[in-house]
Length: 422
Image 1 (cartoon, rainbow, N blue to C red):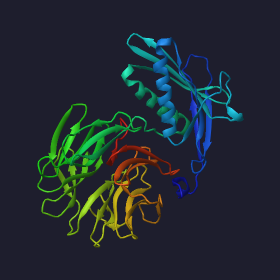
Image 2: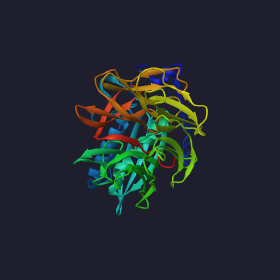
Image 3: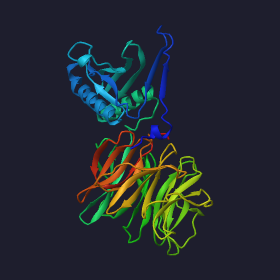
Image 4: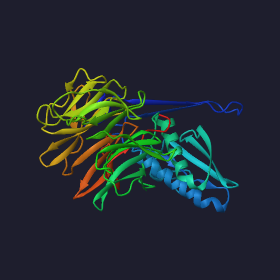
């Protein structure tokens, strides 16, 4: 498969990180130049030293944070975490690396103090240093933050190690809602004995979903910080949120007020802003573009489900997919350059990518699995998608640059949380 970098005219990415050491330390400015073409170039080697413990009592926590950090760096699909051999600062078989991450853990009463440093491998010059003060129950979160810091300083990209996913799971005749960390840790059940569809994050602390608990597909909003749940759309018929526009604080929702499913813009508190479609066909699965000016959606106005794009006020509707008899589940990438969707081919559903102008389209995997409900990670590199292994659906994380796949958790219909603060 042609990677995104190849799609974008094979641009060679040159990242320059210039870090000024804190004034007054007498240290000179360090310039680190990292050049890598992500398409087909393999992982970037980085040495991860075992975090040193100030006292024997901290060794367990130090080892735990080190283990999680190495796994996080591996899950970026960008880095290859390495270790020095023995006590010597050398790598096996004369290998080299880009940088070294190291740290020292100490104790301050009920809290831990972790001093970390990122060093240039060749010069051993400091790229950045940071101190973390934390309790034992957030040691995993600290490792996630370190990973995201390393990714930003070396590659210039935001990491997703602190993100979570919502997903549903069928069990005992119902389909409940669950939440899990991006790495498959910390699974938490959100609902019990309900039929749940279409979970959707609004921000890092709020999400909506559709539940049939009152024998109608109503839309509910949960606020994790306030620990509240409320019904925001209980209109007769479908109340299904497809996508959220943070700047407008609006959901693109499918409602069936008059029997036919149409797409509406709805405020997060539930009031209707505008009806966007007016067609005898079924109109569903709207996905906002990152700039908020357009929406991709699905319509069967040509007698088969196809992808369309319209302006945010419902005008300038154009058909996007021109091939395939069944195309659905569009998800607009955070960078705006690609739309992921699924296309039926025989008895299988293929994961496909298409450019917003429809001029480029490609299948990600040509295998014997079915892929459903793709959703992008905030990094614009990874996709969470439902894959059926036999009759059992799993949430699988796909790296579209390398086509690497990682089984996350048994379930389906995932949605990936935005980064905190975005």
